[in-house]
Image 1 (cartoon, one colour):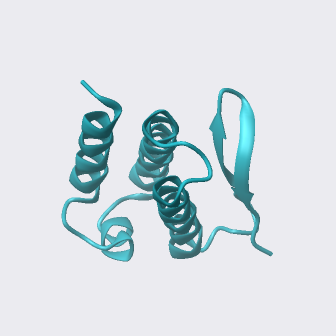
Image 2: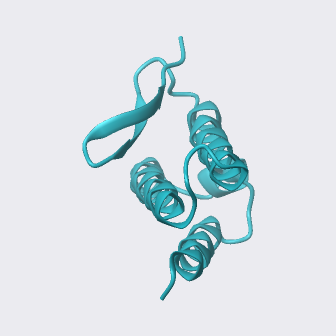
Length: 105
């Protein structure tokens, strides 16, 4: 499979995890324990999506930047949706290098 094909597969997994719902709807339908598991799953999938994007596109191409922006927006939305910004830091890493992290006060 090409990197572009793998991007599509990872994106499909993200869509499947979301179950056709907005993040707020998804979180409202889950228990606290399920929310934490789902957060981890989504973080892992978005991390994988960005990693595959690095294989598919050169940085700082327009395509890569669009995916990077999509990933950072999605992770930010997770934090805002859960209203746990004061106690939770969600970071996106690639090969143990932190690319971006969100801290809300």
